[in-house]
Length: 186
Image (cartoon, rainbow, N blue to C red; front, side, top):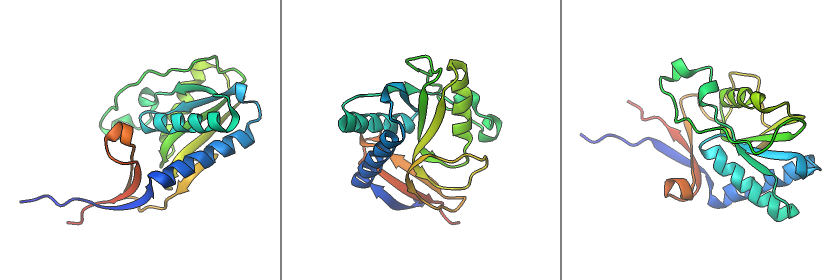
C-alpha cells in the first residue's frame, strides 16, 4: 500500500526568493540610516539563512556589513507542551551589547507570531534595543498574537491546515523554493 504524497504548490522559485530578499534589504537600508547601529539576527534554522542573504545584499548596496546574530527561541516558546516536541537548541549568538541598537529579527515564515514573541523574550537579556524590527520571507496569515512584520518578501494566504515549506539549496540539497503544502485528503 503506497502512501499518498501531499499536494504542493510552488509560490516562489529561487529567482523570486532572491528578488524578495534583495527588496527587503533595500527597505531595511532605506528605513535605517545608521547601519553601524544595525544588527540583523536570524531565528534558526531558515531565518538564519534569510538573515545571511539579507546581509549579503546590504553589503552589496552600501559597502558595509551590519552585525549578525542568531536568536534561539526554543526555550522561550509558550507553546512547548502543545507542540509536543522541543526543536534543537541553537545557542543565541549576538556579537554586541544590544543597548540602543536597531535589531532586525529575521525568520522564514510568519504564522502565529509565537516565534517572534519568543525571540523578543530571548533578546531582552542582551540589552535594551532602541528598536526591534521584524523581517520575514513569507507571511501566511493566521496570527494568534498581535505581531506583524515590518518587511515581508511575499504574502501567501493559506488555509489553516496548509503548511509553508521553505527550502534552500545549501541547507536542503534541493533548489531554493517556497511551497504551499496541502494535506492529503482521506
